Image 1 (cartoon, each protein chain N blue to C red):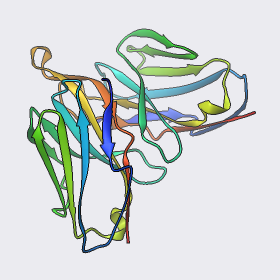
Image 2 (cartoon, helix red, strand yellow):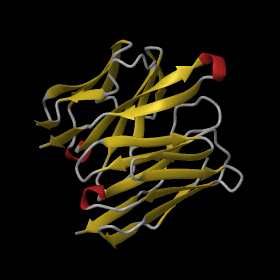
Image 3 (cartoon, rainbow over the protein chains, first blue to last red):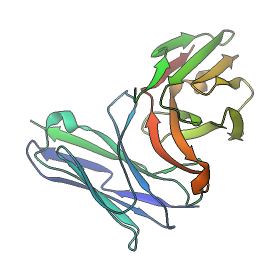
Image 4 (cartoon, rainbow over the protein chains, first blue to last red):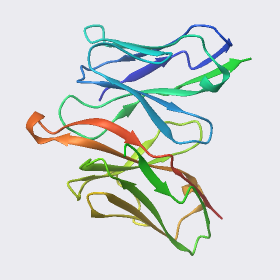
Length: 110
Length: 118
């Protein structure tokens, strides 16, 4: 079973700060998902990446397959970025079970 | 259309009621999922349908009954629930690629149904 760890568990920052959330996993994977969940809300898929780096607006996700590590960065953070960020990994072969990290609760203060 | 649509958004039901949750996607995804999420916890997988057939049941009590009438629709029928079943129920879907060893990609989640059992 893949162990997925996220850090930090909680993060509070001032508006405009650069944010980094980390995710480590124990078993090799084919891809990793970054997800966002606002309080009381559903889940939004931010990125799925299998190598290198992806960018969408102020969000950047990177993955190092050899080190089994991924990071999610938010530039020029804004209060609307306040949410729980979750990384999730599927097993290598086409099984449907995602293993979720415990999430990082991000609060951006105006 | 790149969304998974869930209805209703909120549901309050008594322990003797029968209700259904509905999930719909028109992305051509052939895997569909039901998850249960309690407050401040990650989602827990309940059921997976692959090509309209039930492929995974995570030992879910029979008071939850899934149904996949076609490739775009997924229902979750609820009967005789308990207060501890109150949670956010999330639907998701993904592509399945038979030519790549059945790998899943393009996971898309719905906004969820917040269920309260009274």
